[in-house]
Image (cartoon, rainbow, N blue to C red; front, side, top):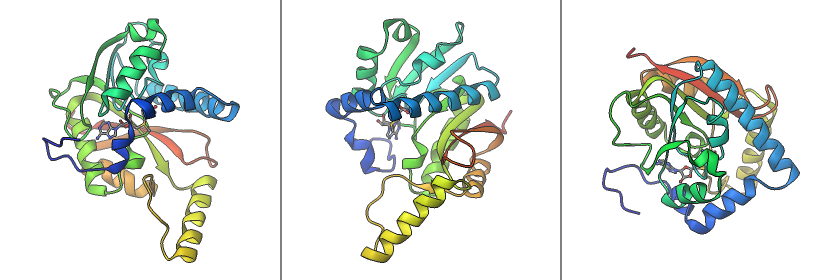
Length: 232
Ligand SMILES: C[S@@+](CC[C@H](N)C(=O)[O-])C[C@H]1O[C@@H](n2cnc3c(N)ncnc32)[C@H](O)[C@@H]1O
């Protein structure tokens, strides 16, 4: 993959080719538990949008295959932009999502969250689901968050894994057991953060916390934070 803007390299980002995009689309729409999980995740995102004041323009980045487009369309006068690092993910969404949702996408384009190339205050809300938990280094997360703070005139919604719940405790325990048995916890491409850690990173990126929505409070590690640039 070319890297003209010196964005940090993350191996997970390379897997989203046309075949994986189709798998991702199918995986999240099939099976009882997966569908239940998607339904709950959409509920979490809907609450986050409400906390954000139901923004009139939203950039879905990374949009993946458009899992959240129907949700974003629930507000009839909302302008929706969709972007992702992987053109294959975008194309799969445009081909397979319901035409009425696709018709609402004002523009769909390939870009990196590290450096979008978009103007300051481009949208009222940047909507970022399931990206930050893949980003291992604090400095890289802060770089993405600074870019979001620059292009948002209102709020930023980011979902990620946080501690302070049962599944985070169980995840940590499994990692520790693996590390004891093998001497290493093995390669990882998803990371759990302490709440204080990510909240300090928001501050370092010029963002303040407005609120949050949990996937399932005290049980699950997914949380969507709603933050706003302090520049306003
Ligand atoms: C787990 S998927 C989440 C997609 C979507 N938000 C969802 O929840 O269905 C992660 C997405 O991040 C995209 N991605 C990876 N690195 C990126 C980057 N630096 N900038 C923008 N998108 C990136 C991938 O192409 C992939 O579509």
